[in-house]
Image (cartoon, rainbow, N blue to C red):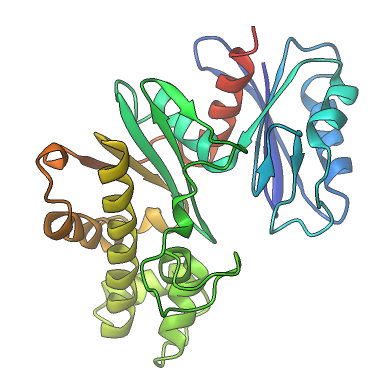
Length: 289
């Protein structure tokens, strides 16, 4: 199956076998003409017919209409992605949000195998997520269910790109971690430098990650209480800092996730890295046949 993972920086594609093996892989910069980049990826991977196509795309999106309007791809507003890819490949197409595809990928071939109710989270430039319940993706009315990055954790907090305030993304994303630390004297260039400073004992950097981990933990607590989760898998660039993020997440859960049915809730790092979205998109494609 052909899997595509569309983001604001790059478009990745892969051919994935029925056993979850990533057979081939290609990427192109998203650039100013995202569909041209997507077309090039498809040509690199599948110059001939394919049985089906699964697409992971940044949101928001409308899976009923087959359209996308990613915040980080301004040239696509209500873009008819499903129809255009169907025309390009001649194959049936399945579309889902990138957070849901990350969760599906980890459930199929990564850290989520065997879970009956899991949340996948991506903590990176933004914060996204998706739910896999009873082995099936929870899509919601429009395909945007599980977007945990916009759970409000600070009602009077910073403005968010979604138009609200105080979403977990405004505290825990890499961009906002660095912004908060810079407002308190940190001078490093990015989240990687912030992590290095935190490990070297910089109190501002350490507090940035504590706040971020607490925000993620509060969002997980809300999602777990509502959906009776047994597992949360966290991936994305910020999650690569390890215990700087995971320790405050788990400490927050110990304080707030006190319901009896949450006692066995586990939080684990993702295993598939940046390929999780491709695996999830492939799982979508296989659901078409």
